[in-house]
Image (tube, rainbow, N blue to C red; front, side, top):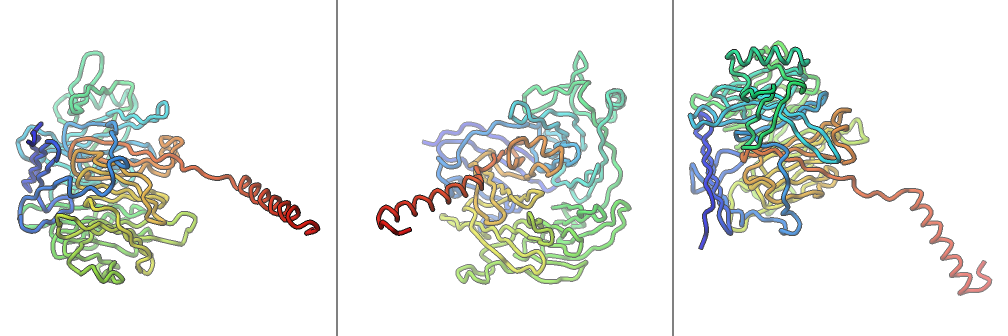
Length: 486
């Protein structure tokens, strides 16, 4: 007989997204709205049931392990980014406009490497009133946050101890931007899922101010910004909405440059090439398109050499440009394809690597039968990170699309965003002796760190020495077997 253990009910925003987690033995069922997190099941227009037993693609001995929480927020987390210059972790989420008692906010975390282990400290909690941040991008010291149908711009900075006291006094005066209550002794308690994390006065305080807001989705009902990106040179800001439109603004003036219909239906993801010449978009209409300004350049097709896959079997879920290590003139594009329909024996998802110049497919490989929910690429272009709707996290080698790291059900439910530690002096300092580190956040309010230790390497001098020894041994063997050989 199945035993129920607990129920967790979360309601989010104007779109009426309700998420119910039912924990039971031996199978856990998740109920979620089908239009969120890359899912589209036929037969249930509004609600679906995700059964873990259908998504297992690796053995328990390979992937199931318990990861400690890096941080636990008092609300569901939907997005995470790492600031390259300071190493600050910016994560956000909330319960939306519904009066459930779940707050909405942006949390700033200080990330440190102490004794070979990573730890995070809450530095500042910025209240976003009734709007949950569903996605964000960092452009220098500015956050572009997707909140309902708008893109809100916020500037943040770390203050000195004296400035931090002034900011604290202002916030306690009633502007409602600091959510953690003040305690005696100058400490603040962070509401982190019941854990008592503290922000002390000597910790650098944060200052956050609103600098602008633009309408990024004009759907007549329930507008929602689905994705946002800054260009590499921070001259452009791009957003994709539920209305299928891509909107491009000149940054920082925020003058609208482009507004064009890219897809029939919601835009799932978008990215812009480092030279700002191409924009790639993926939508729920099964299309992945390359644009030059607002002109369609090409529609990508990843399964031309796979006759067993038809046009409507899979749809694109995510896309990312990435550079190629040791090849300055090369560019790659990575896309994720997920099944449009799920069967009792679910088909695999696929990863595809494209030439980022001519957009020809270079390599396609399956990446397990768990439905992929998000994709991240390391700054060096060496690693890919994947999150799934069942809470699993994996890291792949970008060159070969080979799996290096996998944790089954690292989170209790949908992984909503991933971020690698940046390839910057601050990021490398936090990384330590590891080769890569990936942050993941999920609807379970938790942020976790996934560390990839340096892979063992074979010294070249030792390889040459072994080759020389082999040659000597072969010569001696031949001399012994055939006297007078030399």
